[in-house]
Every structure is written in C-alpha cells, then in structure tokens.
Image 1 (cartoon, rainbow, N blue to C red):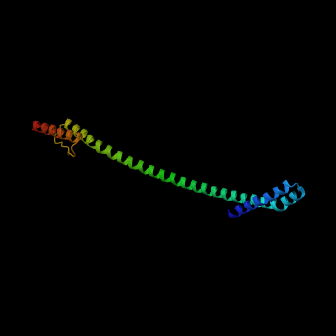
Image 2: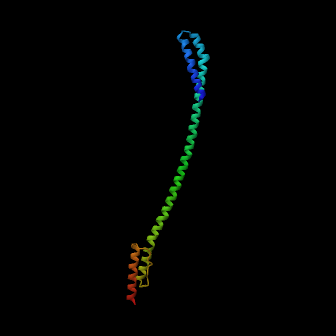
Image 3: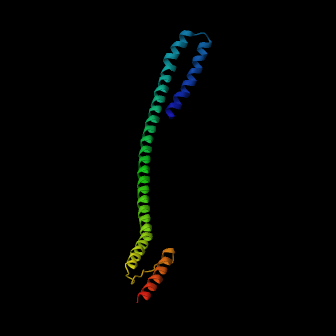
Amino acid sequence: MTDLKNFYDSYLANFDNFQVLVDTGNETGARDYYYKEIFPIFENIKQKTRSLVEINENKMITLRDESKIIARNATSITLAISGFTILISIIFVLYLINKIVRPVRDLIQKTRNIANRNYDQQINIIGKDEIASLAAEFNIMAYGFKVEAL
C-alpha cells in the first residue's frame, strides 16, 4: 500500500513536469518524457492496483467460504436443538396423555367390574384434580353397592 502511494506521488510530480513541457510547446521532449518517466510509473501503479484488487478478491472469497461454514454449522445446531425440543415435547405430551388416560381407563374397567356384580372395586386416589374427585365419588358408590349387596 505504501508502494502504491509512493508511485502515485511520483506520478503526480512527474506529470506536473510533463505539463510544463506540453505548455512550452516542446512536443518531442514531452513525448519522450512521458514514455521515459510517466508511463513506467503509470504501469507500476496499474500493477500495484491489480495486485491490491486480487488480494481483496481473495480475502472476500475466503470470508465468503468461512461464512458458509459458519452458516452451515448454525443450521446444524438449530436443527439439532429443534429435533431435541420436539423429542422432549413428544415425551412430555405422551406423559401427560398417559397421566390423564390411565386413571380414566382404570375407572372404566372398575365400572365394568361393578356392572358384573363385583363390588369390591376401589380406585387409588392420587392428586386433587377432577379425576381424583371422580375416583373418590366412584369409591363411595362402589362401597354403597357392596353394603347393599350384603
């Protein structure tokens, strides 16, 4: 980068000298000065600029590739977390369904047993929710049927 600045400063200084030659009407001297002094500096500036563009392009390609890797990793992590969350959610939903359905199935089975005149039916009461209240009422009813049957 310093070389480019030095070449450019030299180019400007030499161009001022060239302009003096042109202004004085010394066309042959101006042409010779241009090809001997200014043109080589201009070519160096072009080469340094191309080199700088190439370095910049290579860095942009490297950063693009690194960004793709980071994005791919982020996508993989997001998918893994999402999959894990879905799995945990499914397990939780199945647990809740089982927690609700099991007591209802037990109640249905014991109700069938009472319908078949098997009055020794009692349901274990767990919790204080609506199903526990229903189980308590069932136990009272089953005990009533058992007392009447005796």
